[in-house]
Length: 216
Image (cartoon, helix red, strand yellow):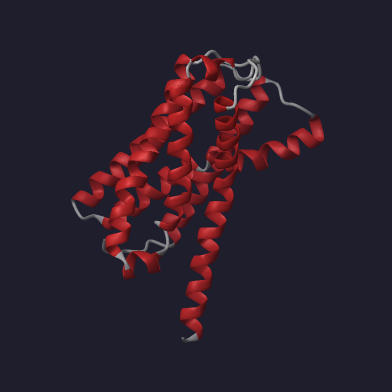
């Protein structure tokens, strides 16, 4: 194995590890919520809406988990080139799960009662970014059907970046909590919104700086 090949393998490994690491935030949060829903937890103001209507949150948890974990491997060029069939098969699962995650998130933003620490601005942000995530996945699928693999890659990166928003939001919220304590509704909405925006900025940098063409 040449040094160049070893470097590429190492870089690919770090890419997957970083994406999965960031995705662990929503995955772990979803796991805790799932345990709460299935473990007979007491009803509280924080979980009452989920216990009253569990199907949307369960769909969201499953969709996010598959999308973030399996989706991380879709962005490794070596895997796409060496195992294009695997990339296609995984994509047939990843893309629908991403749509389930986005659409169930929007459903909850509209129909679940808002908790005290949320507000209409955050609900609006969730609708905007949920719509953008779903649209990115659909546009990515449309691009690959016409064999425009560069556009497919770009749209899928954007959709995945939005899907990882919860991971970045945790890192945005943590310093605020440490300095100023729990944020009010406006601050919380702006901080969570910043998490999505940061991910989209990084996504655009990757798309523009490394416009890799690949076949699938």
